[in-house]
Length: 440
Image (cartoon, rainbow, N blue to C red; front, side, top):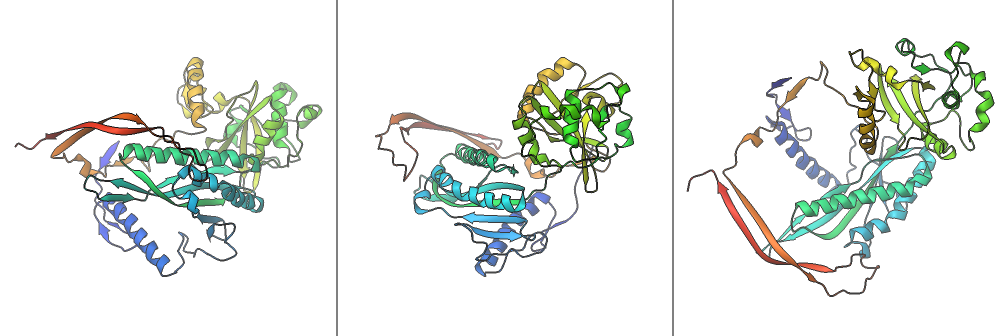
């Protein structure tokens, strides 16, 4: 792999200032955009989105207690929520207090848009008390993972996962920056965009390269139940000499599946509901595009009746097929002729089946993923952090020791805080040493 020095000039997209190092340009841009945003807000000028349109803020957008900013015709929204007086000094109490508000916003949006991707970001004010009686302040943001909401019943569990991620980031910040304490909670930003999942529809022909693999069964259906026929074909296999692609083989087994409340063509969002209604079946869905196979929906728990489906597309039409042999379907990714066993979560191949069985329990914890290697258009690695090669003149190593003292426990008042102090760290000593490369 080639390594080249980057000598191009970089310009700030806000003020057009020129830099010869990309890291300096990125640091400058962050400050430049922040100052520009603050000035626009002070002057009551609407913020601009990346597409060049203006964010809208109106009384109609003020639902519940959050102020809404929208862009791209309402498909992208950010709602800002401020803490009440009793929530300012306790992060857990603040997140609990905003739970109903966040859920109502998302419930309203889900009914209108049918699919939403969302996250929360909490900004707090931290303080650190120094020995010289001065105070140091910081206002970091703690962001959750992005959630994909398609069914209303999943919303409480998703919000709980977001809260745990925010708390984990907050605690990590306190551990890494010794001495930081929460002064107050500033705001919560709820961001979401419209999400349109893929759905299976009428019959489509398989691409020639997939037909030649003889690893995929494409049911010839004239209705919109291609997913149902593919699942039944997996549960009741038919020999290839009897033309298993014909739908009549599986009509007599339709009553084995619980399809109550499911809409056809079936969207990807309904696969989870299909699994709940048919508890003995687990389903994976893989997509195919530009001659590459990639995971779309991967089950968290494999059942005895496990089905791998392939979702192919042609313009607006989607079609589910049955993957009969995933190892054969993926065999073209390697030049070796020996059989390989592929992981359904990361699509990585192994030369022995026992290696795959050892790998899958660990890989399944991280969800679907795919390894992407460099190509001819992206095969150069640029080293940008030249300043990190410079050796510092000296380093200070310090350590503090303390002992625990029991606190006088006060009755817990949930209206103020859910935190109960039981012990206090009392410093007992410290030591530091200076290691220098400079003589004397």
